[in-house]
Length: 233
Image (cartoon, rainbow, N blue to C red; front, side):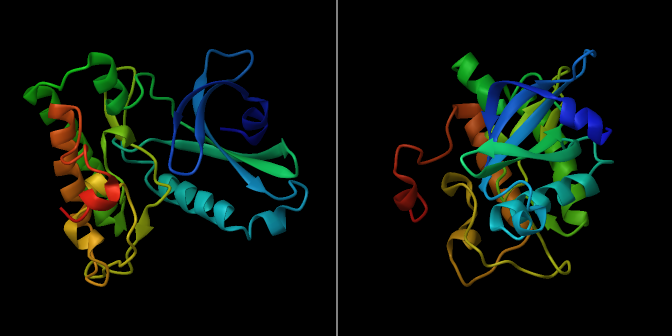
């Protein structure tokens, strides 16, 4: 996608919210093309791009974009087309990441609309596709770290795609482990919660297992308990 096209995109209604920003539908004037745009507002001068790029929020966005671009050949991971920085008002800059639009929203959105769990056959199809996406990530020494129904998007043909790589990370080698406690509490693997033990790509598989429960029963286990307590049940 050309940078001039990215600058011409017109933001429309908000359609979701990721780990570090709001997601809007956007259209390209004069075409029928529609995209999803993650918008992150950062305190800083849009004209001082060098300084802006040193900010933690911008570096987080750069990391997500880098991971998504390297996963462009994987059909089970949402595609990214480019990035733009615009003035956001009140001395803020708006970093805009242009991504593939998944028309049916997230699996979590579907569950809310249905008000009932998915059938086993439907869960099986979603899990099969997500596993292919995770295999691609793990083979490339990356961990998603926030697998849940809200981060599995559905295209116009209901094909599942992993999204929201805002807290993803990269391992230095296949035996490496991370120690940062990060992710959504109800979906966290035990080794992620127990700081100091370290964890690897297996944490994503645990989270996917919890997501299976979520898809079947509308909520993850222990959802009725506050997150801080649920992590240690």
